[in-house]
Length: 165
Image (cartoon, rainbow, N blue to C red; front, side, top):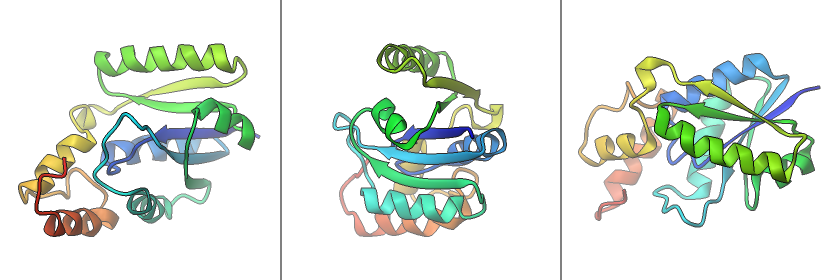
């Protein structure tokens, strides 16, 4: 049985992330979308809010689950018996970073593979930062995030007076 993990911060999840989830769910028997705590990254949404958004979005995929974890992704992968890490690549800049991460993971755990899924061109510009900037400025979100989570994002920006980006 092939189990894959799709790790990230998902702050918030975007249509680009959703596209990777949908495509990976067709490739692997099970896929776990994992919010990995990155202490060097300042997030806007709490872990609980990000999990709620993920739960809403992945409900349509019977073989996809989600969780929040800490530590090294490869250590978590070993604990849960995952043999693949899925990563999305938007541009060359992503590839350089992801190559470093994948190589480090290969050294730490040679039995866990990293699979890169290229972003569809219509999402190549899209990032969580773009979504947060649009939400902060009261822009239309429907082209950028799944409908199931727009209310959570809008609520965050209605109740946060300072710039949460």
